[in-house]
Amino acid sequence: MPRDLTRRDFARLFAAGGSAALLAHPALKGLAVPAPLAASTRSGVAPDWEAVRAQFLMPQELSVLNAANLCPAPRLVLEAVQTFTERLDRDPVPSYRNEMHGAKEVVREKLATFLRVIPGEILVTRNTSEANNWVSNGLDLGPGDEVLIFSDNHPSNNQAWKAKAGRFGYSVREVPYVTPYPGYGYYVDAFERAITPATRVLSFTHLTSTSGDLFPAAELCRMARDRGVISLVDGAQSFGNLDVDLSVIQPDFYSGSAHKWPCGPKETGVLYVNARIHDRFWPSSYSAYTGRVGLSRTHEGMGQRDEPAIHAFGLQMDFLAAIGQAAIEARSRELSSVLIDGLAAIDGVKMWTTMDPSLRASVVTFQPGTLEPSRVLAALEEDGIVAASRGGSDRPGIRFSPHFYNSHSDVERAIDAIRRYVRAGL
Ligand SMILES: Cc1ncc(COP(=O)(O)O)c(C=O)c1O
Image 1 (spheres, rainbow, N blue to C red):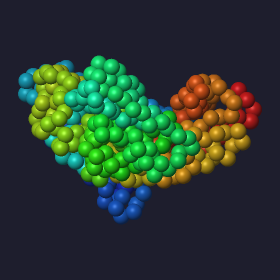
Image 2: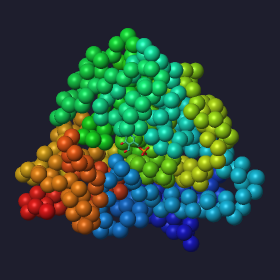
Image 3: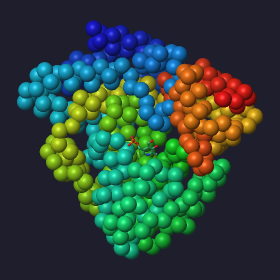
Image 4: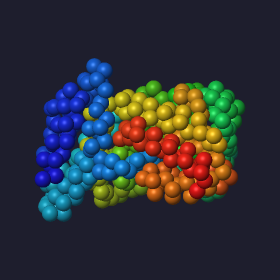
């Protein structure tokens, strides 16, 4: 029975980390969820990464190095989505539907704990794209106002700001990326110089999906705050990857997707909205089934949603907490460093991601000699390695994004494959 399987697997996972306790979530009717492994993390016992890997369905011979795009979810999430969906369809009585609505608040609390903020500042969205668009829809901006963006932001950020500028009459100013990464100071200066008295918003990406550049989020948000500028931090590549502490970064907005680094269900996400901005932020959607605390009472009316997925998102928060976000970040960074060192040593490979570990995390991009990226991607897939490619003339190449479910052998395989392709051609 799947539930027993889950319990057994988690028992293994916890035993590996020093704790065999399981806790049952009151809203989750008996599905086993992990007890925090924080104690083992604190005591310096490294998580058992093989046990973590065993929670995922991908076959061992498939090296999935594509977290920046879409992460697989562990068995717990898949079972939760199935179990709750089945129950809702088998037994759609008012009491159970109410219970399902209510448990969304449990997810909100977990997200708030995870990001070190309060539940009243958390909106449960469908993904980063929606969250970013809620921000550009929800601020009063017009002629005479300026929005400052970074050139490497995702289209859900930059394309949205530019399209809405045409409609609402504000203007957009863009700080261009520089490669190789020139360092934190360069960008803090560049953004500071680009701010004018008309600047209302600064929108940048915490960890870029293009070169894997890590941005000094706390410093940039402080600089914006000091100048009365609203900050949006796109966290699609940092949420569930880095140990993000919004009480330190203090953005006005932070967005993320559950189906990327958190390895949660598809089409669930988060928008953090700092309390200080609530009275200047309009809802983008009005409908039934709003949230019950803080901003969610007015800004989360989205009608009927995939509540089983939202519940599963909460369970996945427990899964991440059980391993420890600091340990997860350390693991993906460690694998990325091995990967970068290996790739950079191959003759002909040009790294787009910086060689300085303090300026990057676990998004690794590079040009594999003169090889066509789409052909490299296809060859990788044939060799059982999942990556992403980028064509065109702007930093073309391959992106690997290792995560905590990967192993050193996944990374070595990827390096060997690229070495072979670059030497022998495709
Ligand atoms: C930086 C960044 N922002 C936003 C998005 C959009 O994420 P989603 O498709 O989950 O909305 C992505 C997707 O890759 C991204 O890399």
